[in-house]
Amino acid sequence: MFTWQSTTSSNSQYFLGISKPKKPQVTFFHNSQYIQSLNKQLRLELGTLEVYSRCFKHQTRTEKVMENHRESGRLLRNLIILNRGIPDCDGIAMPAELSLLAGKLGLQLGSTFGQATSIKLAIRLEHLLRRRYISLLESAPRKDRIHLEELLYIAKANQIALANIEE
Image (cartoon, rainbow, N blue to C red; front, top):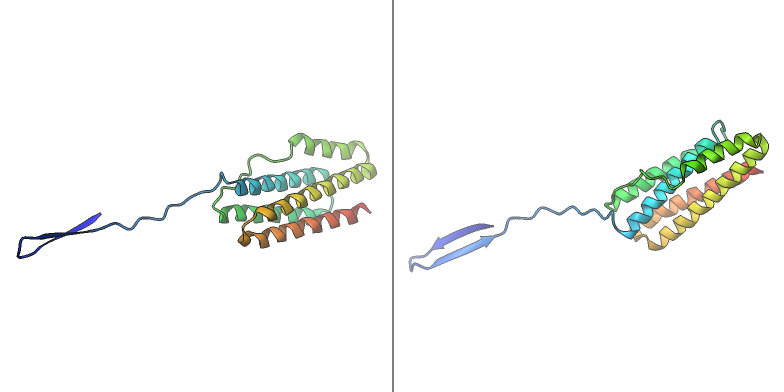
């Protein structure tokens, strides 16, 4: 606090106190339910990408879908940071065993049946992602809804693209 003292001719003293301007406090909301939900979705996106990279190693038809998941992960990270959260990419939502099993299953079952099984798994993952985005939209602040709607649209486009590969 800054103080200023003044003395008048009648020996009266006046004090004026002025507070220092406070620095803005930075607050992280990493413990909020919304940020936790965004982080869960981020881990699911990254886990889905991991599964796809094992299931569809040399498939050019799924490159766009995989690129969409990379983009969705980037958008989710930005959304978490914009909401003053900390992106949690450490724990992937998919167990590593699932992605290994999916890759091995495709090799063991032969190209046709293994491919069909992998595509069905991928479509179910996209459906799960869509349901989670819809749930996030219900709890999202208004400023985030347009971003989540874009991510929901990408998940729907991925699901359609995978269904077209299946046919």
